[in-house]
Amino acid sequence: GRRKRIPGLAGYVPPEWASEPRDKDAKLEVQKDGKMVKKMPIGRKFCMLFGREKNASQGVYCRHPSISRQHAVILHDRRGRVKLMDLDSKHGTFLDNERLDPNEATRLRDGDSFRLGASSREYIVHLSSSPPRSRW
Image (tube, rainbow, N blue to C red):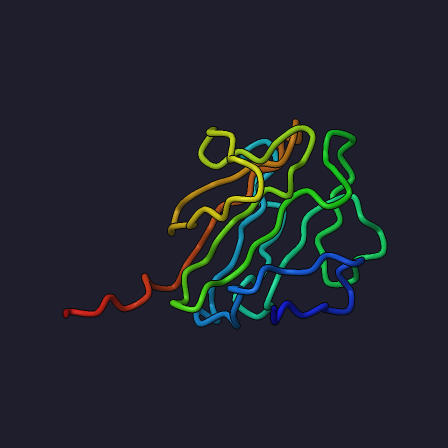
């Protein structure tokens, strides 16, 4: 396979289908108790790892005790779609309140929101545009 290890992900190896992001302006808005805490770009990173993994310099460190060390990841597929994948976390990843099946990449759409474990932080997805669909 052509899976590549990426420094700063504490040993997490993205799946072979993962590609460079096409939507360079894609971002997450992080909300807590309905207030925006910050915005995070997701269109500039090949892979974004969420978890309580302090050694992942490329990751998003989440302190909540219900969050696994390597909890979930945002990836991009070859068609430019943004995908969220739960990494078999103990307390789950919830996309629009539905628990994701572990290790199955689910497409994120503009306006989707997800949560990790029992944390009250909500991540709202902002995509600049839907990837172009071919007419044929």
